[in-house]
Image (cartoon, rainbow, N blue to C red):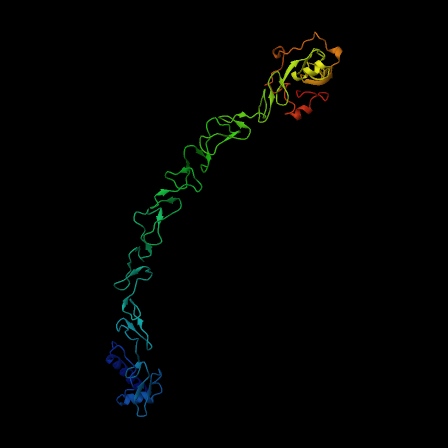
Length: 396
């Protein structure tokens, strides 16, 4: 009972000591051991084993208390806070610290505490969040965009910016953006659109529209309303083929051909065709030869002639008669068979005249695909399919 009474008296003295101590004293330093009036309870604190459990004082031989550095109070149980620590808003549990009470902040607990989560704000009183210039929102975390920046199509990460969302462009993000790669188009209201300018077509408006009438096969264009011809073609619409260079009396259906007009033959269609006499072709066939062979004929040399066979006959001189086949189909041949014939003096008579008037010769229409006067030098595949007996001038 006596021991408990002593402890009770010691804690009462502690409370009285705290009430007398001025916490606002700044720059408090460790005091030299201050003798405490020798009272019975002080002596009991030194004599009691539990009296110095905190270990902040020592007892002198005469029973007085001496506080350790950083501690004050009658029982040396009050820590000395950091110098400048606000006496109302701060406190400490060990010497040299400054712990802020709720609602206050700062090194010395003299500042108001911000609202938790406040990013770019200040406060005049505890738990406020007053936004700094350029920031807004409950926690001042939203940047204020550039004036007139579209609220939906634009955004900002820093104050004064205006960044456009996908599909929009312009200073204030109020203009639609074309589809990437759309170089000759535009958009009206919908983003990522590509409406072609006049003269262009395609998904990205990348294809120019050529001049009206320009051949899609033989012409092309690099800009609208052009018509550039591919190799071998010419003309306003690139629909005229280039004949073989040097072709004189011929034409072409495709580039680099030389199809002879009536009464002409040869690789370049530069040899005139005349009738030959005597007519050595058989079965009523027409005999023709180049005009250049006239000298050979007169001299009795070798002459190249062509036999135009009537229906139902073939061969180099139209000597082969065609027969019925399958009782249904008549095999006809209207080939132009030519051969080389050596004219002897007996075959040449002075009174025989050569018909040099081309108009008197009945020739097929050379514009037809099946014409017999097609230039064999330009159609070797067709020439090989002809009668193996043909030879001589370049007419099949």
